[in-house]
Image (cartoon, rainbow, N blue to C red; front, side):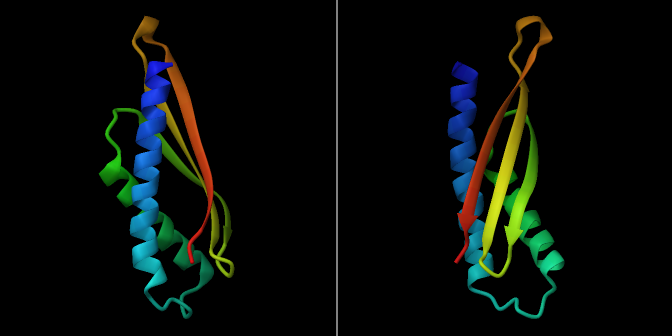
Length: 103
């Protein structure tokens, strides 16, 4: 429970930081002429880069875009962390998922 609680705090802080960075970069710009798939790829790269800058644990992270609606600027993002907790080499997972509106 202690490790999961720690990862929850790490997730929330890093998730918030990444969303702030992505919002700053994409809401202020004009991106109407970029195709949706290119825009979404750039947005998620920026999110992952910012998340990695903010995260402070040795877990292995997987970021998944579950839903994207560029017109409404709605995105559903899940991050899964897999970590070892030392007892007989066992691993555990923690998942954080959020739906966000970026405008």
